[in-house]
Length: 257
Image (tube, rainbow, N blue to C red):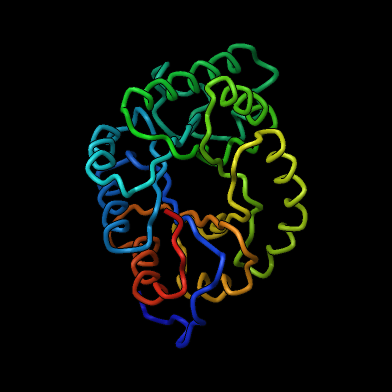
């Protein structure tokens, strides 16, 4: 990646901290390799583990060998391999799943059984569970949000959840933050769990840019801020971004451990 970072980033920001989170841990061997490399050599702090995927056992071994990598549970209900059935009846499409929930009893039953199965599978790993989130951000679906909040309360979960207000790097999309902020606050009350204050990267899936990140964090308010990454290869944009942030922004970023 071309080095086009800001030449003179400001000094360390006080009372701000950042969680750099990689989703899809366990999806593939190259994803696992990229996540570990980004943690060891970049600013990656956390990884969201998918249960029941082709390389989940390998990801568990990595997590056990590197306890400095914060691990969360990445619930998945589409575009993945389920634990309780051979394949998803709605295939890869989150919208198709969303339309079925609340209207098809067998679909809602499958979702609840799958959430329980994935939770149980994670518990068997013995790994500390720091946070939870959802593949394709499906916990933003009202039905899933309500059911998941009840489930986590029943499990006495005390970690954090991805419910920060979404922010956008693209100027043409920044108006969405004003619209989504009240919704994020509502969900935070429903779940009653710790959550980062803001969420970045929704509009930069697979193409996070270190220049954009370093330019924007200076305007953030005090608090914890989450940035989402999807490393797939050692040399892809997200992996290189995480390494460049370590190289050029270590004095700026107060990492949340």
